[in-house]
Length: 317
Ligand code: SF4
Ligand code: SF4
Image 1 (tube, rainbow, N blue to C red):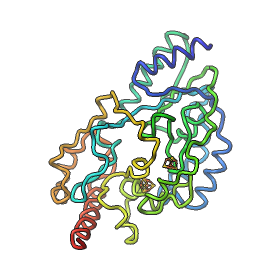
Image 2 (image 1 turned 180 degrees about the vertical axis):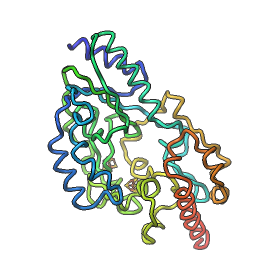
Image 3 (image 1 turned 90 degrees about the vertical axis):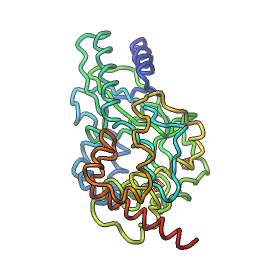
Image 4 (image 1 turned 180 degrees about the horizontal axis):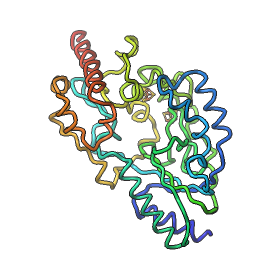
């Protein structure tokens, strides 16, 4: 079995994953309690599907009842040559969303890994998960020894940073697990909490989604609280501020996966141009990228807020 673990990890790295870990598929008990508390505080905002899927989230076997082990992978999407935050008159888009939608890219690689495992161990069954089912992927990554969840609530890989997508391959065989990552390398740092412009991290390790720019610009389809709008600055899809300031991201390297290179032409980034974008142009410009998830109306709403914020800074200066 140890040999199988080595082969899975070697093949995973050859497929372009930056880290590969293994854990069992048992329910996540501690996380279950934390999730209940988080939901009871209404930190999920209007994402009421999070309440609906609560019991599925904490039990990977609700996705694949035969699961015994889970291969958890991290996929780097960082680009050193990409500006992380643009000047105020341009649209800032979270770096993960500028390239090809990661779901397809990672799913394809995990399917290739499953195929390979099936050649080594005939009859093995598996299911791939890349956001396709609500399992607690960050907690599984910690359990599989990949890293720790920082005060900004993202997974951090030691000496690699936090610009990673996660994916899982659930298997119906039991293979040796990695040692869970138990150390918290945040120490006395609070940079992410201090830098968050909307105070969404007032409590360390607890995200109040209702105040988070990522949630507001992507998931929240209703009007945005006037008090939160100035903090949104020029972010029109997602926000990377808490990751930008994190000292562990000084280790970030550029991804080797060309699918994650930006697809959005710079000429489209001035807010005053995006303000006039038509629905057809929106579809065309963001085709195949995660930005389409915001939807045209919400994207325009976000651009409107960013433009108001930019004009306010011009007026003040
Ligand atoms: S993504 Fe932005 S708004 Fe959300 S917690 Fe991080 S810094 Fe705050
Ligand atoms: S900025 Fe500091 S506190 Fe926040 S996640 Fe990074 S190391 Fe942890």
